[in-house]
Length: 435
Image (cartoon, rainbow, N blue to C red; front, side, top):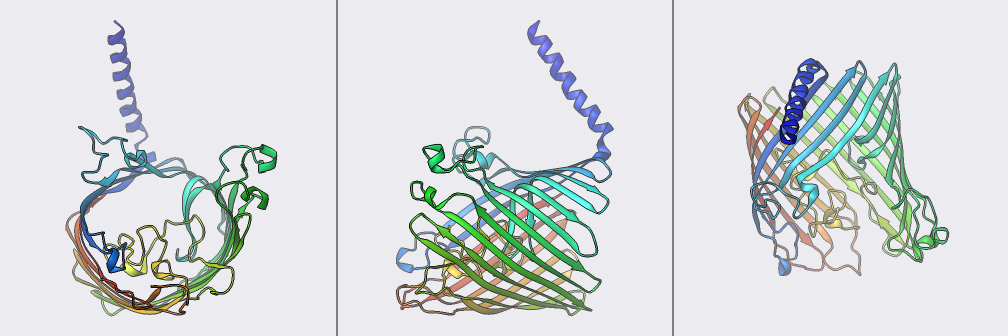
């Protein structure tokens, strides 16, 4: 009797959901993608040929689903999840179903879950959301917080992100708690933007405030990081010509209780592209990033602390943009076009790229870029000297909302002090559906 009752409740629940879904269908929209990729990568995490160990061949996949529920005009709830994102054959694929054996975050990752309410000129977001500033070169955070946007002629956006609760809901210093600090880490953002028909300009400021005191860092692992970022981003469209540029300046300091280190960084990226016709687009970009002072207590940064979901990577232009990131070192460094291989010696460089659509369903990309390190630090062996990056890729939409893509990256790096290197190469293939 008990089993029959349970079965009845389950059936009623399922049919209730179906009935409710049918009634509320106009309030729910769903989108996403499913992809599977094949990789062959060589020498991306060990540029010194003497320690080359990273020849890799593998498949991976990701199922991404976003749901937007709109119960009323100007009111919505957004949820985006990634399911079963992992390398084929990893220990997570246990038994007959995907499990949590190795990394529970791989089974289900919730990366956006927030409410969005618009009333008149005011928009409010609360929860876990993604927010880039400018072109997303220096700041693109995905964290929990509150955002207020005033849609006036000059758009004003103010955000508070809660980066860390300090391990407890209390806010105590080390001497108050008797063991460790539970002070918070917060980020504050102010963004002003103006747009017209042919141009737009945006100025932004971000600050990270770490409420731990210097005394806290003397007895706990880690350090305090208080950082700031000023940036300006502009875009101009003149017929077939499109120009965009961003300049970012970093400041702040870190303190481990015994040593205080200044944070610094100044970087610029400019991009010009032109559609020659409906099939061909050509473009080029310039990049500059300054070097830290070798003889001072400085630490160069190129991305705002704890912000790392960036919308573009200039070094892997094409069908696999943001997937390769060839200038990283050791597999974990945050090295990018502004700091190749995590080097602090600054960089300048230029690149050209093109996009060709021979037919409506086919796109071909190509890119070549050359970068040069600015300074040579006497106490650093093997720092970045120069590098050449080459990308070519193609994508074919073989049916509606489905495509296959193939890409190749070649990156050649020279290090100072005659350290030998081997080039890095990657061959990638992807099949994907979008819905």
